[in-house]
Length: 411
Image 1 (cartoon, helix red, strand yellow):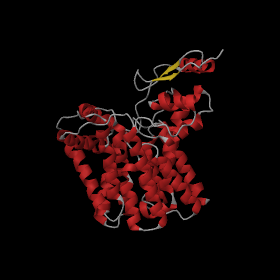
Image 2 (tube, helix red, strand yellow):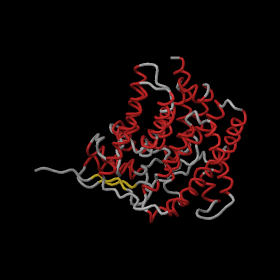
Image 3 (cartoon, rainbow, N blue to C red):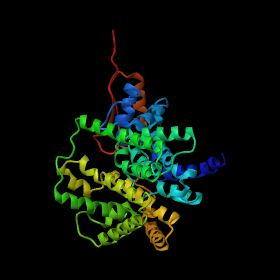
Image 4 (spheres, rainbow, N blue to C red):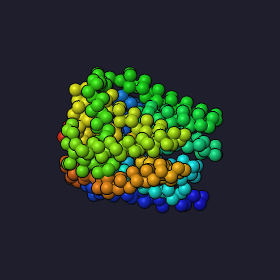
């Protein structure tokens, strides 16, 4: 009980910091992406349907959140979705506060600091405060969970397996984290760790099967030229963002152009790789491998014709967020638990180099709703009558509209 009382204030602070990164989420709330167009609308029309895929994947966690928020007034929905996106992200990352994470991530103060650092990582402009993008935060949390030893109690094991199942069926999170689960099993064999690995693999296989059966068109090719572009994008949108912040990268570092920034950011990432290699008996190399998998998945989700544009634009930055989180885990572990002096100094220096990126990226781009409170009130009024099609404009683009068809009438 004492540990829970000590952890609660840190979790509250983490939630407040995450919400405060974009005050417009509370002051001028608006649905973002699939939060309104898909999850709110489908929950309103069909109720809780976790078996329904979207865009080639299941999203169990997102649909659970939409179901839990459905009893509240429609006029509060954009605000509640924003707050739920922040709360669930912070709660998932709070796995670092568990006592069994001591050996993995250091003492309690180190772990509390890590939680606050994770909710403040740069480059999250696209995923912060949205339910649809929770699985990118979940990826960082699951990377920690799979590196932990087994929970001591039966209830703890049940809770962890439930968390893994929900996260694994929320986007393609589990597919790239199987190596971390394998590492944990090799390190300490037990029936529970076998079960944990089986669950991770099963959820990953389910998502792959759903993707194969879906009508979504994946990339139809990946030319050699794009491999180099992907590497350059990782240097720019992970190393560069961590050192400079997202906004600074976008304004000072033109995509697809040679720049001395590549040397700076590339050297930073090379240092991260060295720190990870020095932890070869630990999870750091596998964390980085998983993060690279998430970053590379952008090539699967986009056609070869559009990939060049995607890798150079501000869109699809969500694919790089897990790697940013994994880099933060590697460096924090290197400082908090490192036993050799020079790798610990290197990890500390690299963390200090990220201060500018963390600081400049704390305040995220505000989202101005295309309508206003009157539009939201009119949408809610329309839903009460359902005698016509009800629509609500949302972000990120004009084509994104929440649409609820008119109710069928019987004579």
